[in-house]
Length: 495
View (cartoon, one colour):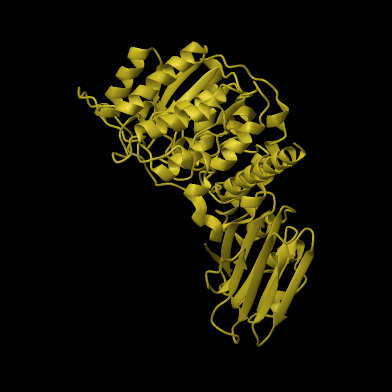
């Protein structure tokens, strides 16, 4: 008897170790899309959502990547006081939006849901879920296991027989080849669980100078909704109605739009008794007040375009749909982070050297500098003063064609190296040895190229002058690289 008990205990210990090992392996191997490495950071989005206190999110945004870039919950809170969360993800079809809404309702009691209609129409004919399989998993993998996820997985495999349920339960089956590309973010999940941007992902690139809005042409034809998407759009309408939630459908600027799409969406909204806003249409687009090219709202909106869209939607939700403003510590404590994101996005558009140097005086930044050919022939006194204020002790005007490199870090201080004839090199790490760097500065007589390697990537543009690479230690990413040509009277910038 004693022998049987011992064997049973050993088996239980073995199975426990096996189960724990499989859990760890599955979690590590699953790809991570975070605020540090992706324009559509679904892993961060969903991990952060689970950090929110229950029943504190009053509006949920759902949809594809155009929604992720267009709606900033922090902006909406700052201007309208409304607590919202952006649960969008890259190529999130209506099927996936439905299951994330269902998952959200386990934890939150939203008063309104705003759904992007881009994926109502057939965009991926080869995939019955209307989404590439990799991006479908990118959306579903971070969902925690519950009856909602089990149902979603069953439905995926029913609709698309090429997929297997086991590959969702044991993700190492799908991602076993990732062993060679694992990084810091795969092993430290707490890196992305502080709910800073609440699903929003900012882009800083400016857009085109103009946008041809949709103007109704009187056509009567309507485009067919993809059958599975129609089914799950109906389910979404019903789910919202059952829970007393106001559902709002929107088309964001840049979505495919003609009379056929507009007729289909308008007709559907009327038949189901939900509101529909077409921001591709001239009147509504103009109401956003976006000034191109800076405030890009088209397709994937940039930060400033998102501010326009978010402010409009916040006002609409407050005035028409009577969503109340609520002060909430979860949104108050992320105001500063959001302000830093705006500053980072502004930085990449600064062309004036003096203004740029002033903006770099920020303890959140680590600044890497490397020379090529000519460092300072045309430096003015103001420029030298701003370099000194940044922490540079060397008078570069006395070393015009020397090799030069420097690192400016709030924790480790300022490190500089220079030589008149030879190339110079600096190497080390920041963020407690989580990020490594190697710099080479090259003067006029020392060679033809420089390098600024941060975390294995070379950010040098091999342009004459001083190249700056700016690393944001809070956002844990390089947020700008710029070469200022200080060899000409009018200092120019190249990015």
